[in-house]
Image 1: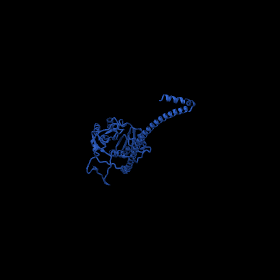
Image 2 (image 1 turned 60 degrees about the horizontal axis):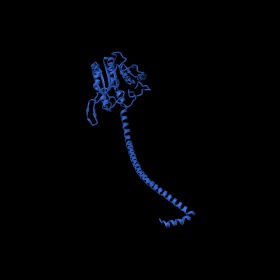
Image 3 (image 1 turned 90 degrees about the horizontal axis):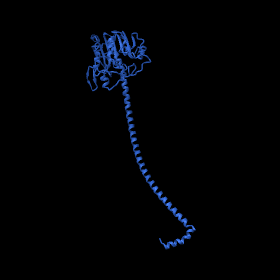
Image 4 (image 1 turned 90 degrees about the vertical axis):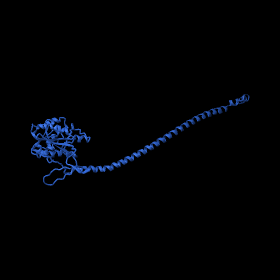
Length: 357
């Protein structure tokens, strides 16, 4: 913003938006404040859950005075430093259920993406009604639970209690009987507008599958943005209009193109990796087959070795028996070599003749 920003800006944690964060989130948040500025011109404005302060600073360009309130002392300290040059803006640390303002002291109160973060939602709405003048206008937004969470299967860890449309309507009706509902959904848009003169809004919503059939309403909004008052004439004074925020640098589309290029480059790489994985799986399968064959061959070899070991053991036994027999024969030969045997030989022969075997 031209009003300047703290060079040591707040870190984006996902709980609150801070300028500089990329993606559709910046379009959503900036658009809401541009949209709310139509009610702020020349008025005393309250910005509840102002966070970094960028929205309060934007509203201060046309408002008589803006008070930004946030429960985070870090965010308020940052806002005071970043937007110290704004003479018609003040930033106060306080909870949204205990606003530090007098009764009926502001013309317009804005609070974007706040109510779903707290338990005391009815108390919060009561506080907004208290500080607003009887003909004051509240511009508030919150996620449409049906689209934001249910249909997308999305869970935001910072949300305490999200609301369906009927829940939000019932909550506001207790204090603000007159309401004008608007739907917000970030997307890619092509805007055609005259170069000069007044601009009449026109909306055509269509689909790629049926581009010749269009409706003049935004279906399935992701967020609700409501202008509410106890005085219906205050709402009628600012007639409904189509509001479009266009990115001058077309960052979202360029980012989309970048992602598509990266995706297109990633597909061949993914295919190549898939081919490599398939080849490795085939190699692993071949190695496993070779391992199985080797294990089977090992089993055959082990069986052969066992048979050979058994044969060797049998031969060893035969060899031992043979060696014992040779030893016995050797002892007999040695005995017969002695003179005693030769002296006994005639007697042995006589015994053999007399008593043949």
